[in-house]
Image (tube, rainbow, N blue to C red; front, side, top):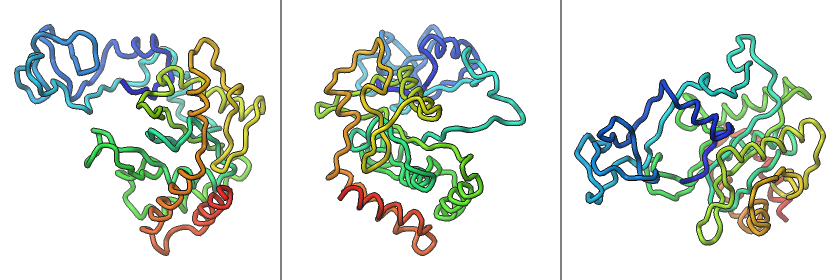
Length: 284
């Protein structure tokens, strides 16, 4: 199974899922439990996601490839007590991300607010079964808002830039993550799930001024020794690949970003076009 995006421990995650859960597109077992491909112990009989009788002899999967579940966040035993604080809480960090098998490193930080908006405006993932279209194609999803933004997305970018101007030094720092990088053999390089908190720890230490970063063409990145990997078995070669920035691949990425921006025409904020040119200069 692919690395998840849950930051709670596995035990806390399971405690969250003891009640009030909605499962969709899963198989229903004869004892009233749920099952999907990838879980241990396939049932001898189930009702598949289309409501039909299913057995392991049937070649068609019992669950849809996008089977999933949801539960109220308040059920998580380690959730922050300020989670539903009505007056709100200060925000120190924005985290954007995408699902990329290559190119995008494990984590990087923006150089400034405009650069962070550029990172959000160019967020991308390779399509999965959850998307319409062929699996594996690159899809730009600015700020993860493509399906939800009810007006011109270039104007939405502009609102982010304006908000940064208003906030000034109080503006949150911006990071970009990719838990889904793979080796040339197609193996996940990062374990994901609860271990994603190790990357979040580096972000928090950046805010607190406790750890440095390396300047790269795409942003500020941790050195291998900056990440808390205690008790985690990640080969040095895998960690090197997770933090590798390939200038040639990023030049191609810049060309794709240019095409992405072109669809917004004259409404595209010039400050983000300037960020694209700055990226190209850093790439040499």
